[in-house]
Image (cartoon, rainbow, N blue to C red):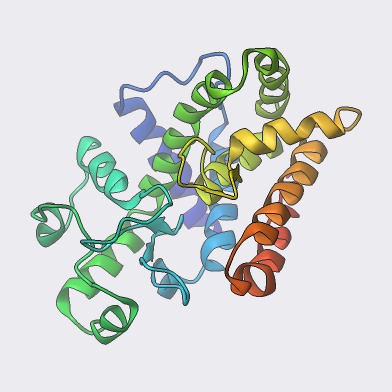
Length: 270
């Protein structure tokens, strides 16, 4: 993604944020400059898609759903009730709220279920018009997708603190305040919520142990002597390693965990 594209990201995100009824200046406000927003968007696109447009419409081996857009937003087919929080229908609603055009067939879906029942059907449909229009729409709305990721992260921070035991809430608030004070910390929060969720959904746990933002913030208690971003990175590694060790499928330990840990190494200041 070149410099011009990155600048467009920042301008578009700023316009979308101004147009939406979202409170950005609260206690944990992610008040990033346009240049910082550009940087966050570029990092997320690199993390999820290696900045490759062909990755915008994808179905990972071993998963029951396609992953779409720069944030690999989950979209469940009809009849699939997966444990992970679905995020692609939220993107479509966000786009329509922002006044952005949506492909007609996508806007008319009811219910908003992915039209492919499994990965083989998805792969067989690559040359169909609906797939082409979806791919083009996701390529054209990358800035809006970053705004959606930011909006989701912003909404989650106070919710995560409120979900923690009362005895932990003050310390978790301090950790969040330290993270949002820098571009690198804000990026880590934004990316992690998009990457592994808030940690509030009951289904997003193995053996009763979750792996979302809530659990990472709790794990930071073991690294209080370190700067906040370093503590967050190490805590996230602990939480994701625990998830892989608790998982029933070998693919999480053998193939996914190394990539997750590599992603955490991008949680640095720009």
